[in-house]
Length: 191
Ligand code: UDB
Ligand code: ZN
Image (cartoon, rainbow, N blue to C red; front, side):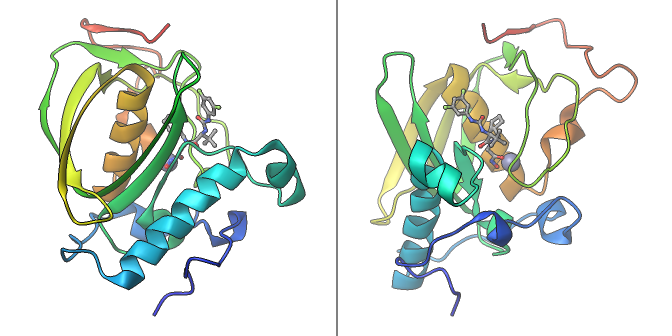
């Protein structure tokens, strides 16, 4: 039994930081359909993202405005994550993905021009993180139904960042060691 029942409020103290080994190991697949326990954990994780993007609550509870959170970031060895994003048109997209897998991707790559950060990393890390421009991801939702997402742009970057967490990969593992701003030929800026 974890403490992350649906009424529990996740705050920054629950988020494990980069020195924790759980962030550097691949996570275990989740049994399907998801248990009530796993559903509560995912609901709790989604509430964290929503609270963290609420100006009043984020200030009150000192939350960093988060767009994605993976289960191992709260110390649980489970292959599942949530994202909560607002697109260019102001439309909100929330995804809960269990056992996600990239089934296909573009050859072209993109990067976030300011670089990436992470809720589990408390320092500023300079450098570009090349990501696929477009991905097709297969996974399962809270109801245990199979879903396939086709993503591009910012959502594609966020989902790849979260799938990396589930594979034990941190964003800085993908930054060029000799020159952090060096990019592959086929990689362009997101904007
Ligand atoms: C984030 N937030 O949540 F474009 F409204 C980052 C942090 C590390 C800065 C908190 C973020 O990118 N917020 C954001 C971006 C926008 C518009 C907006 C809010 N993550 C998620 C994370 O660490 N998940 O494990 C880091 C992002 C860097 C690239 C993709 C995920
Ligand atoms: Zn992260």
